[in-house]
Amino acid sequence: MPTKDEPQSSLTRRDFIRGIGAAGVGLAATPLIGGSQAFAAPDLWLQAGTVSPGDPEQLHLQFGSDASREVVASWVTPASVRHPVLRLGTAEHGLGIRVHADTRTYVDGKSGVEVFTHHAVLDGLRPSTRYVYEVSHDGGAPLAGSFTTAPGGRAPLRFTSFGDQATPEAGNGLASVWAGFNPPQVERLEPLFHLLNGDLCYANISPDRVKTWHDFFQNNQVSASRRPWMPAAGNHENELGNGPIGYGAYETRFRVPSNGEPAEFQGLWYTFRAGSVRVVSLNNDDVCLQDGGDSYVNGYSGGRQKRWLERTLSGARREEGVDWIVVVMHQVAMSSVHDFNGADLGIRQEWLPLFDRFGVDLVVAGHEHHYERMKPVRGFDPASATMRPQPVSEDLDVIDTSRGTAHMIIGGGGTSAPSNGLFYDPPKCDVIMSVGPQLPAPPGGARPKRAPNKVTEDATWAGHRDPQDPYGFASFDVDPGRPGGMTKIEVTFWRTSPSATAAAVPVDRFILQRPRSDSHDHDRERDRQAATAAG
Image (cartoon, rainbow, N blue to C red):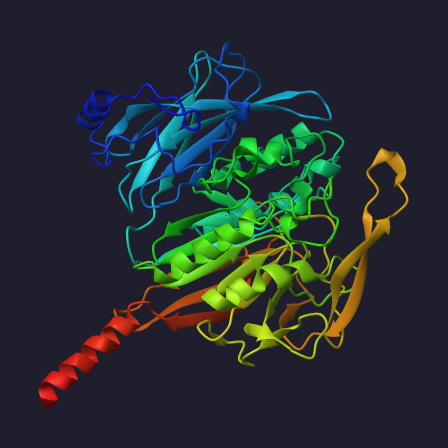
């Protein structure tokens, strides 16, 4: 029997094997579809469907903890439905396997509208395999998509990233037509997956939060139904009245890998592996000093997230076949624009020592609405009251991440409030050191925020800064290299073109490199062979 944290599934071993025989689809023999504990599954919103009005919409994918074998398809219906289901197969053999989805709902604390989400868990998939699928329910028209699983080991792959998107529909928070241009331009590159660096749609500052989420997923469906879009929660995912911490909408709509924590923390931080890359998604509101959401939640996990992060990074550095550790998060440790959010001392205090200790290679973030990348950093300037990160190299073309972590701000996902025109010259950084008393309440009844207390530092870590391009995204092409040698990632920043049918334009390119994790094994073997030959 499934536990309360597992999705209900009527797929038996006999049904599974019969489905494989009938359809010939490439799934592993272990019948785990619909019953994996590798996914976040807060039971707080679980309920069964009852009626069947409306059709599936807002279709999007997520990877499980093992991206070579686990995918979740998620969608929304306008009301409760009977028998939400996914049919799975391949283009060659058709749709031969039925996977029953579980239904999770939340009631929006502002409008009182109930939202019905459905999640079909696909486990036991084959690595590097393209699947086709469609989702439906009794009386509903099917909605189709496809995806490709990650390689099972070291192999070339591509992923992309941006943050701070919003929606193209007028009336939603920070809406802009540019939010509609990025998804099809990302899709043209056909990444294995896409990282969303927080502040997804700004529902918490929109008149209609449910509509804004709807518009966000419908806008991104052109790509998110074909490849996993893996999110990090930002401060604008914190919504008053939605869940015990404020992330109920986000947690219900996404089904990401489980972090092993209680239900109220599920989905807020997680990790997955794709090829030689270990991705770690964090929720920075837990450690940030800035008061940026609908509620001030600094310290909400009581240290749980930090302890999880330490265990996860420690394991990743010892994990066979993993060369790269990539962190996706929202708020930033460094930024060289003025009159915007700024860097947060909380991140420097809580996260950066762990990034240094375990050699995190790459951090992608948003929060600041521009593109900027820093010199690789490791440690802090001991004379700095702001814990200013210490650059370890001036080379911005080829960065050895075994010496220092590369940080990137990729916050030009589409919001109508870009910050690319606000760069300090010469480079400086506003660092939030603390928060003061609450400011006067703004018009419209919004919650008054705590005022940030900032200190300005010289940005000795400043690297490439782009004042010309307010909108864009980055791609990351992983070259696994040869056993015992170097592995590389070619990073490209693409300027968004002002059309949904146009291609993005590359405007910045550089290389990340590091020794493969098996290089020490090869060094030891070479030394052994040399000693044998000498003896």
